[in-house]
Length: 160
Image (cartoon, rainbow, N blue to C red; front, side, top):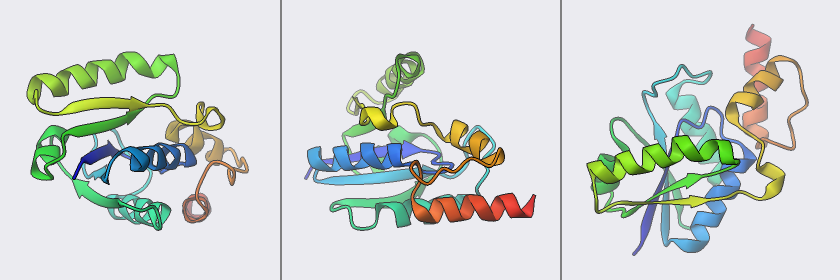
């Protein structure tokens, strides 16, 4: 059984992420969407909120599940007996960072490969960072986010 890990902060998960997850699920028997517990960047949503939103967003996608992790993604991949890390590439500007990360992961564990998947062009410009910025300015984001994520963003806006 071929298992892949799709790691990320998912703050929040977008339809672009879901597109990558669906593409990966067509290639691998099992895909673990791995939500990092303590990212190096500050998050809008808490770890439990991000786990919940990801779990809800992937419900019904065959062979896909959500798990949280802390530490190195290559260590998590080994623990789950995954040989592949999936990363999404939206634009050429993503490539340099993703390439550095892939080479670093390869240096840490030569038995784990990184593959890059491109989302549908409709989602190629969506990023969680831009979504959060647009949400803070009151944009209608329903075409970019799962319903539950949109609801959670609106709750946060009402708190501020």
